[in-house]
Length: 148
Image (cartoon, rainbow, N blue to C red; front, side, top):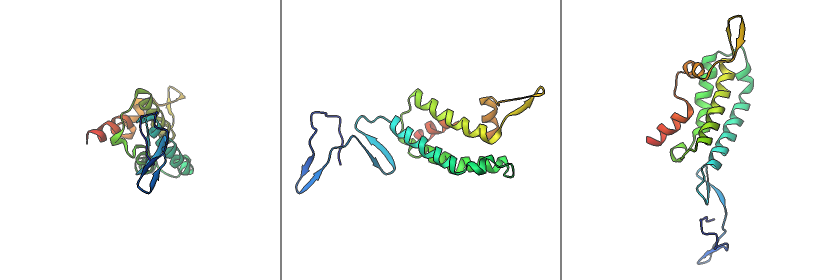
């Protein structure tokens, strides 16, 4: 398989006895690569994989028997690594950053739940969620992994 920006070359590539088919996308070392080097495709794939991991753990995340610390540990050790695999090579657009943040807050809201305030239940603010979690948000983690 080979890929490239040149759209005039729609035929297969032949080198010696080998023929390589031209493709638009392919998976290389677990990461999606496309001819336009658009990382949104990879972010979408990672969000899908992390969502699958979350739904596999959903019974544990909903359980009242399991403590919040254990649920947070599930998130940090199972779901988050699935989400940010290969983030060292990502150049994130604002839309991608927004989608990653939404996903992370969805998980954290499931773990920490609402809070009783003034006789009524209310949803925790984003700042409260990140204080409870005690770590950087997912976008900052991706940027730090890129700098590393």
